[in-house]
Length: 359
Ligand SMILES: *[C@@H]1O[C@H](CO)[C@@H](O)[C@H](O)[C@H]1NC(C)=O
Ligand SMILES: *[C@@H]1O[C@H](CO)[C@@H](O)[C@H](O)[C@H]1NC(C)=O
Ligand SMILES: *[C@@H]1O[C@H](CO)[C@@H](O)[C@H](O)[C@H]1NC(C)=O
Ligand SMILES: *[C@@H]1O[C@H](CO)[C@@H](O)[C@H](O)[C@H]1NC(C)=O
Ligand SMILES: *[C@@H]1O[C@H](CO)[C@@H](O)[C@H](O)[C@H]1NC(C)=O
Image (tube, rainbow, N blue to C red; front, side):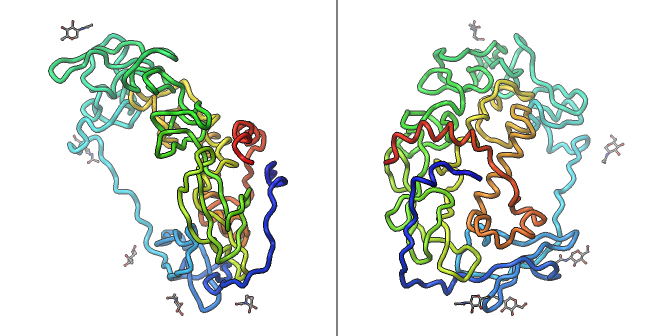
């Protein structure tokens, strides 16, 4: 993995007196029937659960706190079977694009080949979730139905997201492409930002990471005992201050590992290529930024979704991903894929627009 900014940023390698007592050596253990995380006096054993079982909690590996608990393997809980054909609690619960068995399952009232159908252009509508993608429920009031009308194109005046074309939403009263607004510009919602991150005062931004006052680049290495400060890039607001997290070794080396999916070095390849113009769903789900829904609606490809999932897994377990201490078992346990690499060219694109703000 190549991070262009890394070369410009120097990491302070002074010797401090450090307290790394809480940072235990962490390792994969092939079989450990009862435990997925077993905390002994100076080592943490991490193992997959046997078939039919799942780990009660791997989450301490992502926050990587110094407070360790044993986690056991518990029976795998299968999702309860949903009987769409006979269960009347699934009446009008399924939006266009969702599974169905009977017409009455669907908000739209039409089930074809097991999938709820949207209402076609010009047909009546009684909700903002049933018009075919590329149309919206026009003139719907609390007392009367509307009809499905073609959506508005980029730049058109609007008041609601659903009025705009697929992949657009209503931002600053104009139909605006999702994931298109660059840093320092105002937006009504994070989904309009290339970073999918909005500051509390409404500007598209990203996060930069400091340890003990020094700006860091990937892999955001820090010294145990130091404080990591996460700030917005353009406005310099402090988002959080947290301890440097353990890396799974009993050394003083750790990582600033929070907010990794919003870090300016990472975001470019995550959202910029998620702009979309197609959807199998209808109205309300054709203007959203939720990645799992975009995938389910066919707005983004399997590859794009996979990329997003794999990158976010690495970000979630950042400290252990960087140190590599559980590389042997991380993938089989479904935590992260240590071999997956981000596309460097996309990172460059996003960085170009931010370079201005980093001195
Ligand atoms: C975890 O379980 C082991 C027994 O397998 C025990 O020796 C150890 O003290 C436990 N650790 C914690 C933190 O409870
Ligand atoms: C797990 O499931 C088995 C049978 O499938 C059962 O005998 C056992 O009691 C269950 N264990 C727990 C902790 O629920
Ligand atoms: C649902 O009801 C039909 C009859 O209406 C019945 O034949 C079918 O077995 C039922 N399905 C389930 C899963 O209960
Ligand atoms: C909107 O609905 C109202 C009430 O049904 C109707 O009187 C009006 O003509 C409709 N307007 C348009 C532009 O369709
Ligand atoms: C760190 O771990 C190594 C190997 O597990 C061990 O030999 C050493 O004593 C540990 N150091 C501390 C300070 O715990």
